[in-house]
Image (cartoon, rainbow, N blue to C red):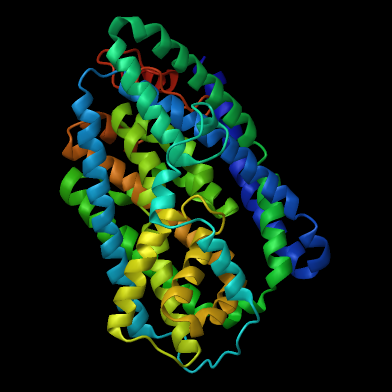
Length: 454
């Protein structure tokens, strides 16, 4: 039986090799035939929409199961409060790192760019259409209970799932049939998601071909310094800041964690969206050994509030535009503008192209004369959004392990076994039925490994 399991798992390796081939093919088509490449744009859009279609059901099932299966409601509140505090601190650190690197390198100095016509104004209007802080808070409450699962708003799905989870928990034994029903629904949701992921090569080809067809390779060359600096800054943040913190608190290697999430990183690169890997992150953190309650609260909340990569992007992009237009920002202006952007990014979390839109909205509010410089960033924003998404994703993965350690809701032995590849993740179903259950039967893969050891 283990041989047949191994054969089925090998298919997933072919899937992700196909994604790499599709990305390379998309770049070539976009470069050699730009007009044709842009016609493939709907392929990427459809694939990302399919993934987003599954996010609300995944969040709902995960949180309801997590909260409904524990008796101490205070545990969820403790995890949520600790998560919000941690996210605010890490966003501030990311902001500071971006400021330091941007001021040291000054990639836009001497560029003397011409103003882009209306590009910044259009994006700023899009950002302001998301509303202010009170509009953001008000929008958390859906119009109906079921609309939270149909509108695609992550925070609304999180809010309703919390209500349902606590309600089921308060019902006691009477709520157990509901929990079992949601567990079956979760299996169905993950099975559908696995089917959708087989379309990843098609979506990746369409998205990459469209971007290269529109911008060409010149945009990457002209703004290469900014891109390289941004990527290096993100690497320093992930492997330096997050890596050191993860090892100091949880004794977990950031390199092993990144290796464990390698397929999710590839999916994010293909779609330039960390949302595409959200359901898989929930499943993998559960398998890693973090209790479902913690995973169900930290991961969805982090996708709206833990935007480390976006914070670094907003910092460096603002400094670049100001320098490129010959109107550099003073230290005081930098701090005021970027603190505003960090807050604004939380409200624009559900807006497509939130990073670029928030950048334009912040510049319009503080330095309107710099707004037209946003048009220069548009050409490479898609390439930079990949680093943003990868950094945001890494921050949420690390946060789940860290908060699990602080709240003692993580199985240390399970973490070591998974990261050492002794307990492989089940790629066929993405559901680990017996996670966290003492004495539970091992998966077929783990049984095979134990037999080899014996």
